[in-house]
Length: 144
Ligand code: HEC
Image (tube, rainbow, N blue to C red):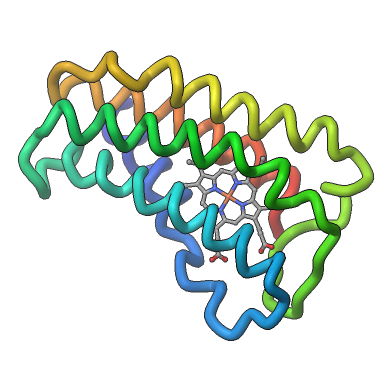
């Protein structure tokens, strides 16, 4: 179960991290950079969960706090209905922007509540699962 959760979260974090190469629209670029920052922070935790890097409680809690901050920018970053051939954003985002923004707030809440609670490596699996689900809940509806 724990392993599955970590794999799920790493898939979410790992997909298309560099998809923004060649993007010309600045608004699309900005929101992709925001997403990449989320993926980067999730990877910090994922690497620790897998034992690739040494466990560091302060660093994991800081990564979660950074994710909460980054999640709070999502509605603003996606405010402009910007497009780019490289964008994976689905047009439905701007047809139901309230629902889309609610998914961003879910991620902000989950990461904000987790920040400060990580005390040992054992806490990371459940945290990754919760965060991965919050990313996935939005991606499954709003990303190609
Ligand atoms: C509120 C919705 C939402 C949430 C929550 C969300 N994403 Fe995204 N994400 C998107 C959308 C939409 C795109 C496609 C943006 C585009 O291509 O224009 C995207 C794209 C990405 C990309 C590709 C960026 C690129 O350079 O092309 C990565 C990586 C990513 N998200 C990671 C994450 C991670 C990790 C989380 C959770 C910690 C997360 N996302 C949470 C909506 C969301």
